[in-house]
Amino acid sequence: MPLRTGVSRSRNGCLTCKIRRVKCDEEKPTCRRCRSTGRKCDGYASPSSSTRRQSTDLRIIQYTSQVPEPMKMSMFPSFHQPLAGCDYRALEFFHFQTVSCFGPKAGDFLLRAAYHDAPVRVAATALGSLHRAFVRDGDGPAVAQSGLTRYALQQYSSAIHLALNQIPVTEGQSTDSILIMCVLFFCFESLQGHFRNAVQHGIAGLRILRQREERFLNEGIVARLPPSIVRLMFVTIENQMLEIDWQSYLPVSIQSTLLSPSKLPPVNLDDTPTLEQLSDSFQFCYNQYLKFLYLSQRLESAELVQILQQNQAYYAQMRQHMHAWSDKFDAFLGAHVQTDQSEADRVTINHLKMWRKVMGIFLNMDASSSEGVLDRFASEFGAILCLAEDLINSSSCTPASRSKPSVRVQPSRQQQKTLPTILPKPESSSSSSSSSSFFVVSLGLVPLLWIIATSCRHSQIRHRAIDLMSRSRRREGVWDSVLFSTLARKMVTMEEEAAGFAKGAMYEPADLPISARTNAVAGEFCEGRQGKIEFFRNGTKLREEVIQW
Image 1: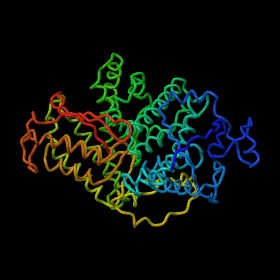
Image 2: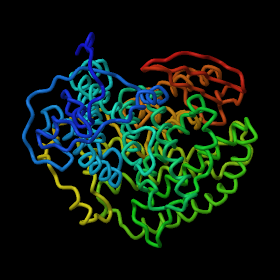
Image 3: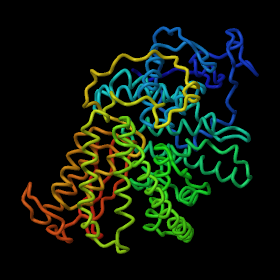
Image 4: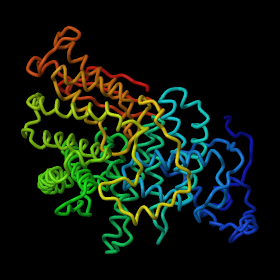
């Protein structure tokens, strides 16, 4: 689809006309076009919005719009006009497929937001269309050239403009909409493979979230805090960025804001917590561990040293919370026999089992960070890999069999009633290929497989992990299985060649000399679909290369 060129257009129209993509007469306080058609005019952006655009991290990509005739359908109050066919199909895919990538509770929340908030709906439509192309065509040239992708980019551009009109947040204005849009933008750029842009959207949302939390907690206005589910979604995003090392993307001016311990308490578990509560609680514990680990390796200023000391105190509490969490998780497993578990519950339980094992490895390591400290955990890595293989090889992890967002251990009837369905039930997706590309934003498998491949020096275990990554075709936020399997294979090959092993040779950790080990891989996402990777051994750079995906 060609870019729009040589067209002079006013960008001062009302928000309703912008969403409808029609010419606005710009009459104030409400435009004549909206009044004449019986629509609610949402007013105009602040005159200073054009200057604010230059200081944000949100990226604008402008495409022309070509849509078919609108389709008549039942509407929520926020729908000011019938949906065009492409809008309808994109929102349908978002409804039945995309929201399940966030987990049940977050999926329900995003679904309600998309139906009741017009700017969020534009972002959801963009994400639904791109996700549909990703599942249908995979992650190759066909996606970039497809009509679904071109339409998704046009909607994404519109959503960016709507988000910019809400920045900065004025006094008394809710930040829920812009925070949700930052989450959806993070996912959109992740699906495109533009991971640097995704990280920038994540940082922008985290910054807004932490500033609002700081302000309202200081003022004692707890009721105006963003919803807890928004906080949880950003914890998931923040965990991914800490895992891939966001130092090169994080401005020094806001490091202390984002890395300081949150003043909000962690998720408190009931005596008999639900599986959903156990999953949420683990995410917060893991987040605090990652912050402590990140800060302990980068004492570059007195301010960060002070933050580390705060985190050390919090870290001790987190260890206690982790032990308490583990006991309650065991109690939950004992009270819920495997034959009574749904497929969705089984997937969540196995994810938590794997992540608990990884946390157990890290929390039980010796204080010394010397190379080879992980060699004694080969059996634990093998157990994690077996669980991962079971999940990926089972049909429950294919996009075609994802559960609806409202499925949970203890479903809430009241909540289900708040989600009236305006879209028809889709046709059976049993014909979908089990090899379809898979997208998810939650506790994932790719980081675990990366840890096994690069930290476990048992040849069979690490090569099984690499093979599983390469064939799973998973994208979990900024963790792409094909990309990271390629990096892991490069690192393992370097170690095996340095040790003088023949290709395909079997070995155990004790057989691989410390002097042959690649003990660090540093990477940075660049613009577009490329990045810079550096491999180190004992502080010496072995290789630097630019990779594309």
